[in-house]
Length: 259
Ligand SMILES: [Mg+2]
Image 1 (cartoon, rainbow, N blue to C red):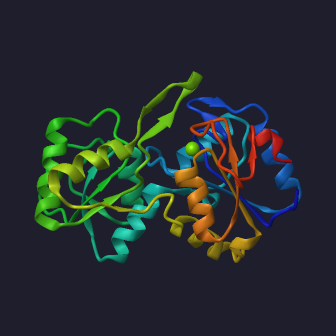
Image 2 (image 1 turned 180 degrees about the vertical axis):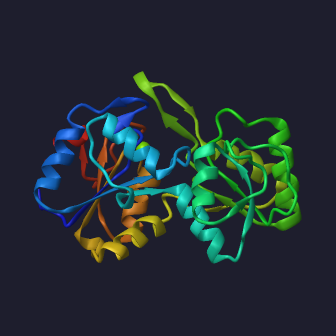
Image 3 (image 1 turned 120 degrees about the vertical axis):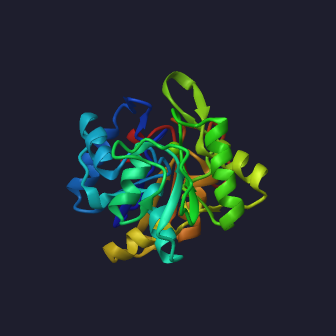
């Protein structure tokens, strides 16, 4: 296999499943780093801050830095700011609220603990992500009112499911996007993979050509589509969502087979 200047890894289903590291993943990341090339961790999961991802990866013996962790939550915040939006109603978890606040956005419906409530006052847009504890009919209703008033709906990602341990799948934030789009009649702007911007912007900051980059992930419709759209080479792993390999797609059973 050729060597790349940058290896961009999806997280859920690629380096770990739920709280279980994919066997061999830490060794592969270490071997890649020993070549002195760049590593990125690109996740559609908005449930944690970048610092929390660094800690989670460290708990699995995978070394990372804040700058290497790219999340759809931060991408949503960056996009909102680019659109001139300052205050948002969040359907999401404390990790998303803290991520948006770190970027300087005002989250109108969360207190200091980052838990979302039903206050809609002053929101210029809705940002939604994965929302496992707080999601309810009332939260959907409040978000619907903001979207119908502002016509501004930004979604961190639209993954319909995500894998946890032992082959079990849970509803992803795409299920929430589908619900909110259905009742509001407004289509979300989805900033996470397969949109290539998260990856392209990170590579720009590293001054690395996408052609010298390998995007590794477990989903054709997000990770591989994102890598291709960015102009990178792509490698599918079979430790997460994908079980079948489309013709012409480079695939390995697991990241451990990458090096
Ligand atoms: Mg994945």
